[in-house]
Image (cartoon, rainbow, N blue to C red; front, side, top):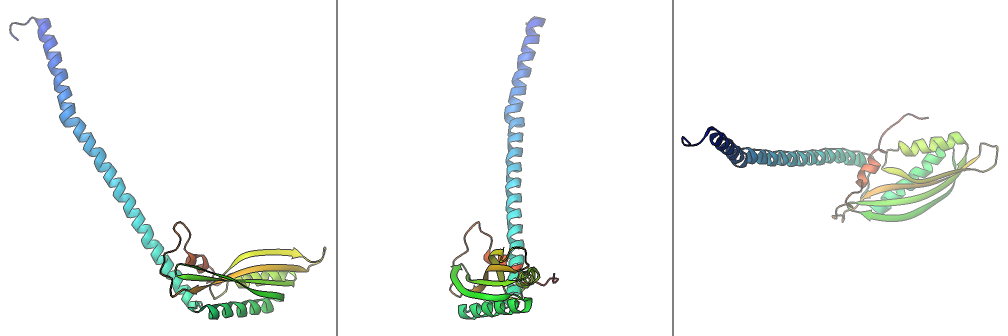
Amino acid sequence: MNNMSPRERSLALIVLSVVGVALLYQFVIDPYFQKRRELKAAIELKEDELNRNRKLFNDEKRLKAVLTNLNAGGLKTDVAEARSQLLYAISSWTKDSGVNLSSLKEGRTTSEGKWIQINTQASGTGPQKAIANLLWRVETASIPVRVTEMTVNSRREGTDDLQINLGVSTLCANPDGDKPETPGRRPVASIYGSSVASGREP
């Protein structure tokens, strides 16, 4: 470089500087940021996995509590016993609430995983207060039960005389139910867990 003119030396230094920066970026800076991106992605993946595991753990605890409540609330392992318990309960609820029970029919039975769902249809008449008391007794029942459908109509215009058609179901443990429940659906047991509780009478 001693034989170069000042202008040539300046150009050479600029070229060497550019090459040096390019090499620095290629072999040091770029690998560093690439490794940093990979580590960040790995951390996010582990965090997602940890969150999923936490959710599964919390769901398991919650469902165990639900199952405990169901067992304490009269969960049966025999379909006939569970159906008889439900029919007796509906008869008692309507009588205690002041609703005149006009029809009580057994519905279809369906299975999903470890559970058997037993359906019943009931119809009755009574004033608004009696209908409200009936619904309160169903919602705060000590057995696993839930309302699947309901219609309330006025029998005579301008009077406090109503007719209620009520679909009610209960759960029964399925001893042969080893298949998992349908993915993406809310676990069957959790739907009934909220019914096994107490509340204030309206």
